[in-house]
Structure formats: structure tokens, C-alpha cells
Image (cartoon, rainbow, N blue to C red; front, side, top):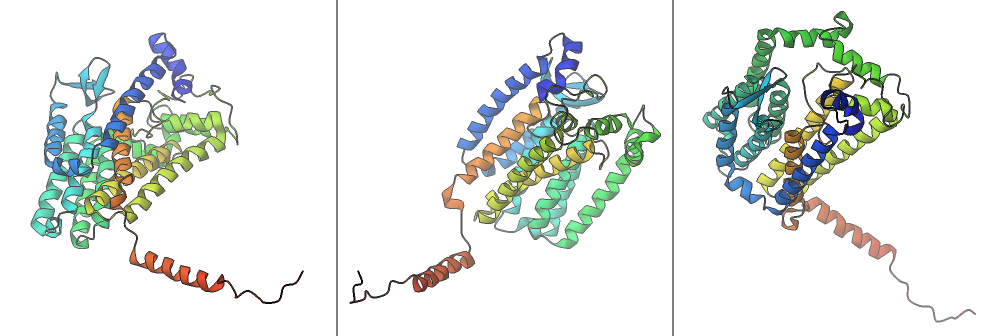
Length: 373
């Protein structure tokens, strides 16, 4: 799909219609190695080094803001690297912050349930959000904050503290929208994209033009019309629109079903885990994936304002793809640890009860002395 969506733009920009395909294959190779490494490393390693990883994440977010170190693309200073090869610290911070939060939520002393520690943690979260917004990367910041909020909610902390944190977040969110005119334009264009069809509403309109006429089976693979310079860089944030245009409603449903399978599998694994850190880690990663998919597809079909969020596994991009595979590798490592799975007492009792019933129903009768031929 990346090759199909990008071939026209790649030919125009680089003279090679397979430019983005080759680069994504390289990212796929790196991501596969990272996935295997993460699947082999015991998950306890991340708990042990959570603080160090957190410091590395903070430093990287600061470095990207320094001119000469951070690379500016599309008006955002969000990358560190050399030339075309770069990393996005905000993507790294996603998994680092979830690991850091999972560690403290699983603390046996209940540190996070104490007000002073909770509000100190909340302050740190707001600082991280502020650093991400200085790039600016509004989409990543929102995804990260929503994932952390879900983790806090299911950890049965004081609801009073969570509500206060939510209120502070809403006030900050409103302030960020008001402070940047382009964000306010995105909100208004979301409500009525046809009010500015050549400006803030352009991407949403072109995305809807790709999806609406595609019918059940679409135009067929490689036959998209919107990728001919109508939908800007369709291989990234709006690749789902190209999927629906070429593969129709069936293709869109298949993609959504695959993501739903991943999310349901992750949450089912959480229920079975008896280690608190592992449970919080899997829940955080699964929630991160679910929120990112929901926001991306919501933007593409016009249900949410444009935020610049990629679709995991499918959109073109190195940092997002590699980090997502690394995250999945950690989940696979936990999934393969049979010592972490614990059946509930109710389930065990139910199984034994079923066996007793089965024994009574299918108990063999004494053989008859009469033989009928």
C-alpha cells in the first residue's frame, strides 16, 4: 500500500517511483531486528532501567529543540539525525513514559496513591507534554496523554486526583488551541471543511473524495485517483483513504478488523497477568495503539480534526514503524512467559464443577448380563 500510495509523488520528487518502498523495506528490516531483540529481553529489564530510559527520553526531547541538532520538516522541529536518516524523540518517549508509569503504578508501597507523589508525577507529565508541544507535535502529545490517563484510571488511584489532572489537561489543551491560530483553523475546518476548501479543509475534503466513491471493492490496487497530487503525501497520515479508495469498504474493514484483533488480544492478556508491572505495561502499549488507530482513522473519515498522526504498521515512516514493532516485541515477551498467567479462582472452580457434571452425565452403566444378538 505504501508503494501504491507513494509511487506518483516519489516519481515527481525523486525520479524513482520505488523510493518510499525501498526506504520502508529498510525500516522493516530494522524494525524486525528490534522486534526480535525486544521479544528476547526479559520484561523485568525495562522495570530495572525505567529511570535511566526516562532521563534519556527527556534529554532527547530537549536536544531536538536546539538549532543545529534538531531537524525541521514541515514546520516542525521533531527529528534528530543526519540527512534523510533521522529519529523522532517524541516516538521514543511514547514507550519510555509508559514503561516509567508502569513501574510506579506497580510499586508495592503504593507511591502513586499518595498525593505528593501523584502531583509530582503529574507535573513531570505536563513538562514532557510541553516539550513535545514546543516542536510542535500536537498529535503525539495527545496520544501520549490519553494513554497515560487510561493507565491511571484503571490503576484505581484516587478519582479526585485523576479528575483534577483531567481538568488541568483540558485547560492546557484549550490554551494550546487558542494560542496557535492554525490549530483553531483545524477545529473550524473539521466542523465545516468546505468553508475553506483550498486551505485548512483541503486534506479532509480530498480524503473524503477518495473514500466516498470507492464502493464495496474500490477501484483496484494501484488505481487510486487521489494520489495524483490531490491528497498531499498520501503514503503517510492519510494512507487509510488510499486503502479504501483502491480496496473499497472490504479493504477498510479488513484493516480495522486486524487492529481490533490486536487490541482485544492485548487487553485479554492484561486480564490474565498476575504481575502488576507486566499488566500495566501491556495495558499502556495496547491503549497507545488503540488510541493512535482511532485518531488516525477518525481524522481520515472526517470525525476528528487533522492532527498529523500516522496509522501504525501501515503509514510510511521509520521512527513510528520501528518503535511500534519494538513495543510489540515487549508484549510478545510477556505473552510467552507462562509463569505470569494466572487463572482466576472463579474459573478454576467452574472447571472443576463442569468436570463433576460431566462425570455424572457420562458415567458408564453396569453391563447387562443379557446379550442380544
